Length: 285
Image 1 (cartoon, helix red, strand yellow):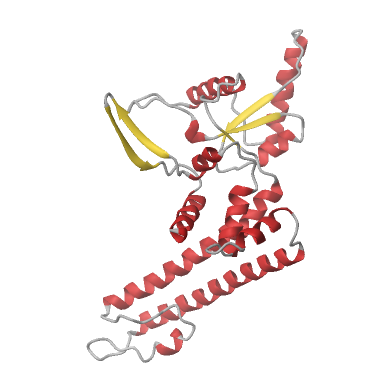
Image 2 (image 1 turned 90 degrees about the vertical axis):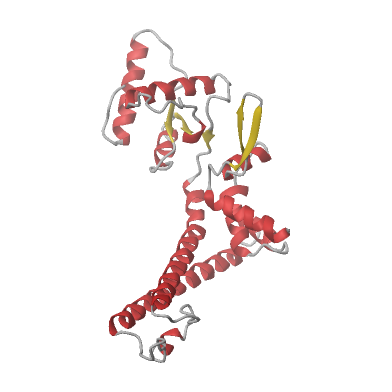
């Protein structure tokens, strides 16, 4: 119920202040537990506090049950009280109150970056290519493959149905887009090259060994294997259902009275993992 600036040292100072007050009141403090909702700031605060002797848990936001009323009151004070209730229930062993996110190490978080960056670059490449195709379609030109490396040399030869060449402004725009495409392709190749070099440097250690073993399965290449290992298999899961919940692959039943229907996948979780597992299932089918 006390507001602070986003300063880790201030949070630790407040905890120590409360600990001192409890000790002065005659209490024996053997355990200090702190929890916060998973969000944009990630896990750096959890790691920082754990290193200083605080037991930290990160609450999965979607796992906290809230009122479904349209006009329910929502303030920071009410949210804090609700999180306190679910944390105390979870500490008592009542797992239905909320779910906790596994706090990864800095090395585990960093190992996910190449795969995520590559996916972002591939999406950027597709976005640029689709925009160029749409611009050409508005001029009545179809069939031009803007993603080819020699596409820039073929721009001058393009003709509209009226028999004219491309307008000057759109030609310059396409050249800039193609320069961006070349840069994106170069960065994707650099990420893939660095990943192969990393696998060759330490082929039989930890996650690298798992990636190499998975890549030997027909239908799974290095990219999919790396995503599966870094995002899922490097963690300690209790059961397969926990993996499905993390990926949003569990069902979302809707039950009211005697009626019960399945509304499809929950889609609450790591979308990157969900897409990868669905694509993998289609490959095997």
